[in-house]
Image 1 (cartoon, one colour):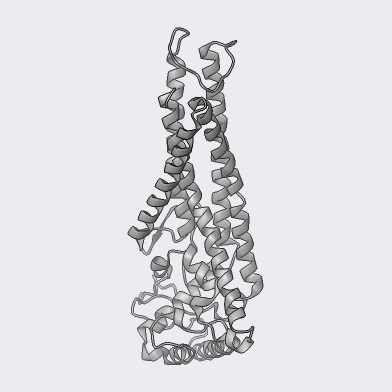
Image 2 (cartoon, helix red, strand yellow):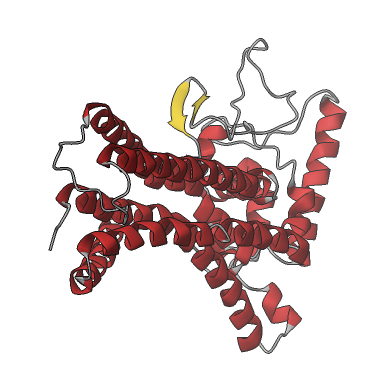
Length: 368
């Protein structure tokens, strides 16, 4: 089967790592289409009745589902500012309720604690692709060391050249050039994909939306009597007696108008007390929760906002065609190296796909 064991093992490992690197992009597109179809089916099943559609729970809407998927929801609360009794450390006068994440930093220092940023899909793609990059870099260095030590009397078999008009050293040098270009292309497209993934967070309303929902979720779950007006509205439009914001109806005009009215009343009350201070909703962790974006809640659930997210995801998914190029090249070289033993190549690809699916399922089970 193996004519050049070293090269063929490298190609097999390379194909596995490429498949693993593709997974976050495929899954992102799948989730986006799934949540879009859920909304479509909801409209169809409800006969496009506007009143019934407005009563859909938050968890049945596109913006809620996709935001919960692309962000690390468990760590969202760590990005809130905290109020301090000390005037020196007080953040109550800041415009924002929370820290803005830096897409150029993989980790953030929040309230003195170092945590992984909340761009879950960005991090997932980075982590899934990093082994591929490291493997290519290590293999390139190893091949360069072989080029330095090679001589014409070596028994090294060069599978990527079909002509005998060049020496082994020349053939191997051309192979190194090709490998370098291949790695360079991967680095370029890897960087572009990361940039596009970061734009999904920075150029859409998802972050402001999910942070607003997290604020409402904290208020809803803690059930403090000082926030009784907000809680009463959320429970009024909740189909279930469950203390989770995903079971409340936040995507229709009625609840939006009531929440905005309460928000504006609280602002007016605070102005009468101290015009320079913002109204802070009470919570156990002392987070700075002002619901400052509550007035934009209708815009966050608008078709324009949803389409912006969908278009960004479509732009990201187009890079999957680049991965096809990355896959075709090693498959072609592997077929040359196997010299017509395509049955082995077929079995190899089947095993690679099964292995990739198996590892992906294991990963999901361990992280559920």
